[in-house]
Image (cartoon, rainbow, N blue to C red):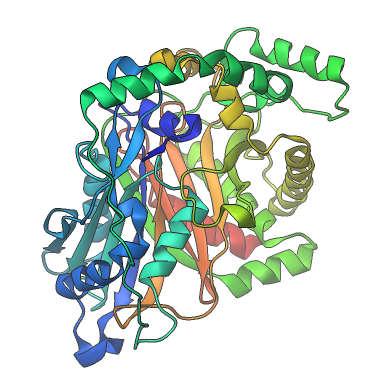
Length: 472
């Protein structure tokens, strides 16, 4: 068994009847390249069956510690119940992008069953393009962006012919623990609480304003005073997220939109204005959100604040799965009308964020979470986010923007060529909009998730993004 870190556990703790903690991707695959032109649920099931031994997170089942005395554990099961986890469905004719997006939104809105390994996979046929969609859904407690890419790398190949996979040399399953055993593990962990807290103090206290806890009364002041006393020399601009239509409590229902822009067009814009690909992506997203806010008479005078997930996973941590991330804050210049000026300001802000990131401890989120005993961890996490959305000006962030570089060469799943891979990510109270983009094979694949009630017309953002890129 392996224990969840406090950061992994946070993604479980934030779940309630309205918000979920799983992420996913919508892969579009061309069956014509598969052997015999056949690709569907049977081929995907066979692929996972053959490679299951190399995919330990797909066998991890959650084991809770009684009374919440400590963070849960992962128990590794002997086999994957593929009949439960791999599912097939078909779109009704004509099988449009909108029908597919609606189906993805419905599937992603449903929570995962915690009595089973926390993932599902859907093979969706009937799209008007003739492509087959494969929607993966896995809990954020199991993976972050990079470890999720590791799992996909084990399912994808460089050629349609695939590759041979070595069978495991030994049984990898854990014996199922009893309630008494889990209680014993929890009691053994109790004496470690003070030690975790003491270890976390030097790095976490001066940087609490860079975490979700920074929204609590007095936390920003405590953090800045501690930073001055320690003389870390890092200038930290105070960012306050203004209230918007997507800054309140979210509903249980989602909207999903997906689409592409050409990577060459993004590179042309970054070369013309001497910035970076990421600068252009963030800036055109800012312009698109600005247009949406104006259309809904909701544009704040101040810039929005974007949460930008940054991986701190090292090469030594490859294959460890779980979460190794920092959640950085960056201004999103929705208050600037001119696209070129907005891009230049974005370039400066992201360079400043990169400098701040270098000064922050890599395990800041873990250290900040270690201040809270596991017995009250879930309630504390929920209360923090509830407080952040109760009044204007308290939220740490308005939305999530994440840009994930991907391979620029073709990949195949069971022989079917991967044509596009659209991310599907998380929204939370106070952050009812998530824009995640992944580059692949000369294009950038956007997956946009929003609350169904707050942004029913979220698909308009895709047109705005393309127009903003053209303007640059």
